[in-house]
Length: 536
Image (tube, rainbow, N blue to C red; front, side, top):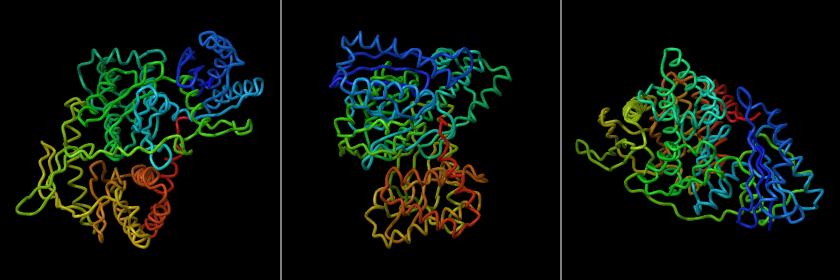
């Protein structure tokens, strides 16, 4: 089967042609604005003007004619509306003129599938880093799930915005990478992770402030890269630990950055995982990946009529089933690294059975970041655990703490996290658990305490009692944004790991509001956070 793929979600028009799994042509033409960022309508005009020449070039390289095409696939979304509509119109015209089937595909899933093809990885955690998209995606329960993403701007968008501040033309990432190699001073920047989600907007504000104070572009580029790439590597490892997977796929335009690839390789090596990054021309937006996913879907029997080919600017990777993916049972137990951040060891303290939690030094992070995170998270976890226990919430006791080494001794809980066992619990008992979880979160939020990673992996159950653990990324005096993010994280964990139990999440929210009616503002903020997307 010969498939024509047309990519046009943002700045790049891509024309790809494949025959089965063989790449015949891969043509890309990037729109480069004269100043500022991408202007959607100008980019769309660029795609329209370059489409015919790019198509002719691709056909010539592939040594085929239009009559040889069996299927046309196009990027249905997510992306910039004018650009998406331009390529969809072109695909429809080809489908009608040549009387061949047409299929619109999800751009994010296309990145993942071309990575699976080129790397031989079967069931990876994909870290997708580009201008508009920053996501952690992996397969679970019948479809690709978004386990984490940016809560504001994409990582590539952040790099481009900073580049404009130091008079670097678009795209700014490659020049920032060069400048960073000459940076020597690390400037503290906000390191904002909630669960597997990240937030970058505060970093840009801090960078501008340092610029006004006379910091050099080289040092700030170095500081920027070390911070945001550490964040992305950390949430990738968090997803590996959460899912017990051992394959990482790093892709998207920013994946070409050598420092990011180095960090990911170090992390993967330490965990005994496999890292794959596609060739550079398949990391960036391209038509080959669109063609390949279109072929997979077509072979699976997925069909579209012309009236089904409307575009979707906010097309979520987790909004469609992926029946072409075969479930792989390769979950791995990591005896030394059960979590992304800490080594958990059964211990004894003052003749009491305990858990010794040692925050692991991360070789991928520079010392300044690593020392701060290990110390700060140990301190936060101990403080919040003590506070929530005082509120009547079941949680471990903190028996001893070593901030310098990032070590805690906490009481042992004989139970399992809900991530592992929730589906096995009888429904009537889950009703009670749901009510307790809602009550516990309400008690925390009433006092302005955010957990920061409130997922089913951090809620334990011993057959009778529910416990809250590991609030190391939480905070005190939290505002509605942090409290709404807590609820968003819990919902994400249900969508990704317990999609068949969404009624339980709704019961948790009902319980939360029963015990804390004023928390409706946090529920509304959760919904607002869900609606934030790079493209609108």
